[in-house]
Length: 314
Image 1 (cartoon, rainbow, N blue to C red):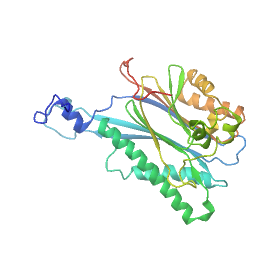
Image 2: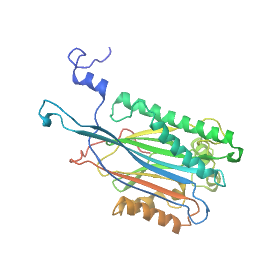
Image 3: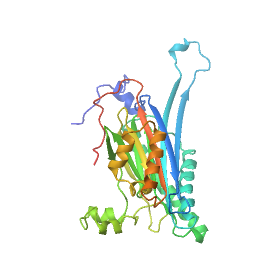
Image 4: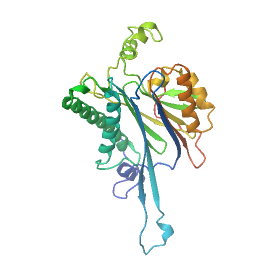
């Protein structure tokens, strides 16, 4: 028998209300930082990043009611984006820049911004992130069709969209997203590389010379040679004090996860953590462009210690 809501549609019970309107995210305080460096080997920097804040405000201009009964509201959503271009000459830089610019332009034409969280909104946002990926991929391919000199260009793309403490991550390629929690760095994304694919199929073992040989061959990227980029979507619920990290492989190829975690654990601020990570990547060789973006989340009120994630970290 189908389970029914305790609140009926006729009396607009709370379950019915939430099904229609979702749940307004709790207020959060987000500290953020980001930086990019060309590294010690590459002549150009093909990485790009962006940190965006969306706002939905309501202010009463005139009313016969007591002003206190209609308090002003300011809902915020945060978007963190990192892209690592490829293609040689200036094509990689063009690809990563174009991907972010296209995403910005698409955002301006959305019929509605996701600013609340509910089951329907979660599914809608996941579908929207997939659509973003397809549109960006199509745009980059059209650029190549219009200019043969751009043949072979492409870019990775990892983005995080947060509503309160709810975060949706979409990634294409091998730029990564992590959550730092309780002194540990928890990886959210998979690398879309041939090495990762072969490891998952049991063809080779991780951390071997064979795997390293294929670790930079992308099997999924925007504007690449293979048709149809596909965004992989992840959804997690943050806890008070969690830190969100997005980065290119210029960081993760130079530093193992435990060293990245140690730097973040010892941070004085997101800005200091970003700079320290880039400095260490350069000291380790700086063999590629390196980009690091951080968002640190705090709830103004006392955090619920039992707040759990919506998916298991692997």
